[in-house]
Amino acid sequence: MSIVYKVHYKTKIMTKKDIMNHIWHKLSAIGQAPTSFYNYEDFYKDMLELQKRLRKELETETVLKRIMTESQVKNEIALRDADYVSDLVKSVTGLNIFKNTRKIDYVEARSLFYIIMKHDYQATYVAIRDYMKSKGKSCDHSTVLHSVREYDIYKHYTPQLEEWREMILNKIVKERL
Image 1: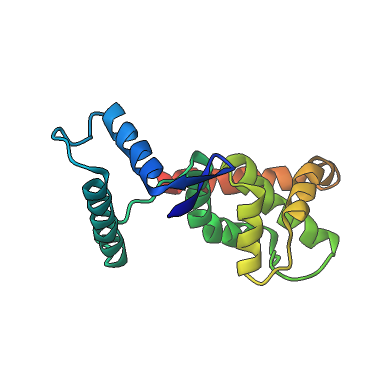
Image 2: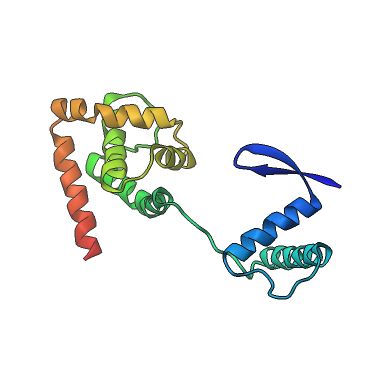
């Protein structure tokens, strides 16, 4: 019996004995291999039993560990506050940033929101895009990227943007204390 087994993007065809040997050596390297000798068939049965138990635990959600990257953690934090920040932007500018329009006032207000989420909350462009889409605004990550890059031009022609940004950030900091 042969099994196709993927290792680091390379596909190898391994027999059941090869797989068990590989697992045995991996377990030995970390000191987890069984101390008493028994054959590969028993070892294979034990591995299958362990696999079944783990699947059952995961199905019943008794074991649920979520490993997150640093950017995923930052995105979680940013998206928790995204509603609050968007409400602050709306209250300061008087514009609904989720309205599907290209009027310059709305573009600048969205840019203000994007710059706060990207620079102050370190959210990724994709996370910001997903948030905007969840609120009904047609948006792409490249739209967010372009808007963040153009923020300096927007604030040159509308100096209030930087004042509004400072007001919003000060309000967020005051409420955190």
